Length: 149
Image 1 (cartoon, one colour):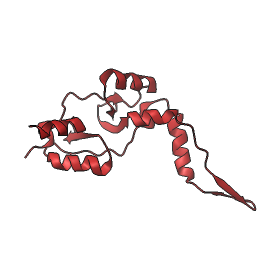
Image 2 (image 1 turned 90 degrees about the horizontal axis):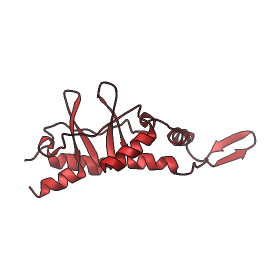
Image 3 (image 1 turned 45 degrees about the vertical axis):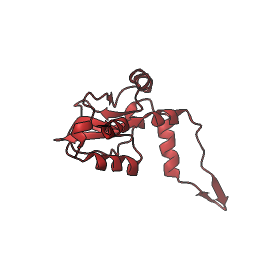
Image 4 (image 1 turned 180 degrees about the vertical axis):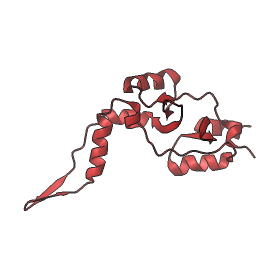
């Protein structure tokens, strides 16, 4: 049975959490990838950033709908979601737009389990972690390649 270590990409392109958004855009184009792990000064995984995260910066900001009833203002949508949208639209650093809730696997995770993680969590890239360090990533293309092996 194939495991993550058998199909993973070892030469991982990552981006530092303090990198500017412009630099991230350049890296996506230059390296032809649609997602990258985000790392800190020690190289530890702190998040994941995708092209979608970057594109969301250009979408118009949706102001929440409210109802004014007497002296009360009632939000019809989540104010927390609006605050998150404002944070992402105004971000200047990768660490401000990346997802910090990262789905990971270990080197000995079966490829079928990695595929399930991707589908269930709607992600395209799974970092492979060993001893609290990222040793590689499994991308959708890595799983597709393994099907022909």
